[in-house]
Length: 308
Image 1 (cartoon, helix red, strand yellow):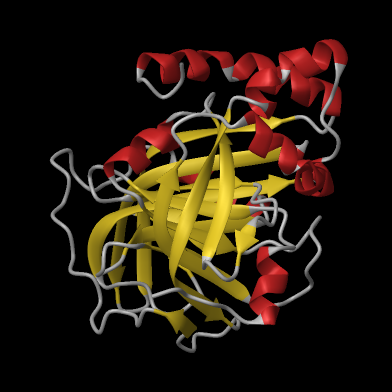
Image 2 (image 1 turned 180 degrees about the horizontal axis):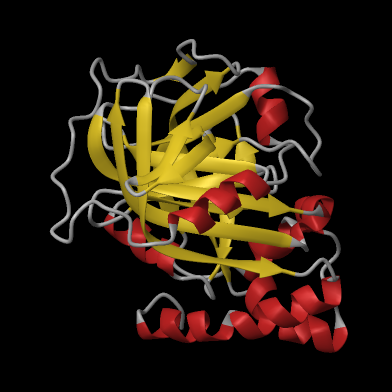
């Protein structure tokens, strides 16, 4: 079944400068990474394509084990759509086996539209890992969820949503309580403009909701959302807060995995891991930081057989 979407949804898919890319962890949780989608899609085939540098190999390792993914179109700034809708695409990812230089050069208009011209000279050579050691991730869309900003059920295109909520998961052996400073996580939620919560749905596909913080206590961070209802019970979940500037040069990401407990209207998130970075707004400093910072990841990708 090929999923098609309306023109108003296509305006968002081709116009948003950033998405939340959600993938499934081996333990049955979700990790959400902010990415630049570049507006790449094929409506007739029902596919959306993103790209990732081999200098950031962890997501590719996860996709090898489980190709179920979601893309959350949640941020309008620095893009080309003004729609108020929140859109989640769910589907199955297919990763190209190696970088395709010809294809990467063919998407230069889309790259420059969202990320600006590629640098040349010394900085260009430093950015080779970021520019050219990239692979395409083509997502066969199975379902499109459209939220209007209220707690009403989303409009659905493609496969029907499962009839029931996902069952609670068994707690981790190390316990469900926070392992990361909840006050710092709450501060990120308050300071950064975009926060996303992800978990695995009843059909195995990641679900993603926009959230905001309501403070914290010893049990974790209190969360709320207007994007439907969070699943009752306890489960592994991912929480990501981020911000970005034009061309994604200045950006900040705070990425967590942890435990979500929902009881009625009360949702508590206990962060277990943390990752992230803050990159400067200077394009020169961004080039240096990306070019140098991705080299250890590229070396790891070679060790894992992801790069030749």
